[in-house]
Length: 104
Image (cartoon, rainbow, N blue to C red; front, top):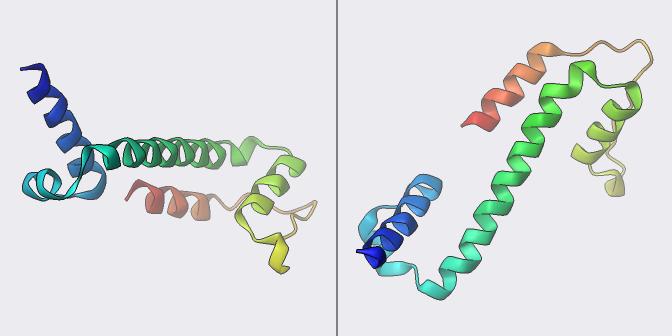
């Protein structure tokens, strides 16, 4: 019974995360891969939560914090950067759209 619960938890994780079927998971995911995939899923979820938090806090953030967030999203190494101006207003519509994209 304990083994069955553990197996169904694994199936649930991949079905939810990747939309894989039960048969596909049981036939194609090996136990050694499970541990690595679980770490990847957990890391991705934490990253998504951090991004959601940053998007939520953008309207209240200082100019410096907003600039740091924008820098994090852009690739400064390639010269692609965006500068926050002193009088720049928060684009609430863009924030809502980004939240909707992340929710998918």
